[in-house]
Amino acid sequence: MEERSKYEQAAVCLFGDYDPDYPRNVVIKHGLEKNGVMVHEINARLKFASCNARNYNYFIYLLKAYLRLSTAFFRAKKSFRFLIVPHNNHLIMPLARILGSIYRIGVVMDGFDPAYRTALMKGLSPLSARMRYYLEKCALWLADYVLVATEHTKEIFIEDLSLIHI
Image (cartoon, rainbow, N blue to C red; front, top):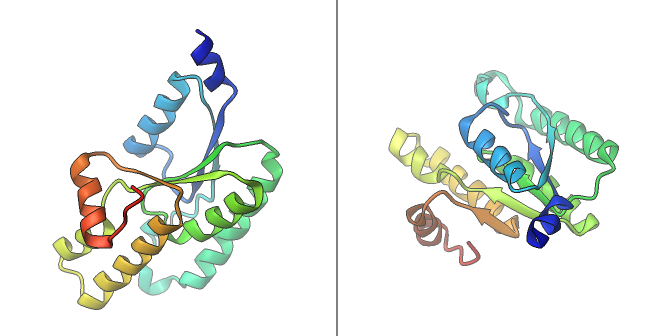
């Protein structure tokens, strides 16, 4: 009972541009809540992933997402112990890292599926796959912790991206 009270005071924040109904996000949120952790959500809700990339400017997306997320973060006025950045939010990680450093909050990246390996399996161009490789490596490097689903996924990140802090 004493152990549970320690977690009841803990608060984490799901932070990024993500689908709150995606099963992985639901499981993470409910699992934390079931264990007495208060979960706050700060979601840009721009749904960039569903946009046609040829007709959408990455810079405009980042500007909108960073403004929405920053504004919501400052309005929340909560003391979070961790920012959890859901999977495929690699472009959001620099903002999470900056906020985490300023406010001394841990940053957790959900490395659910390796974007680089997925790009190779989908047959994307070598340039696109390489861009995803560096984007993913940078995002995971910025995290204090990386959440993975399986030991195999952990080994992929260590092997492909030479990350040792997973």
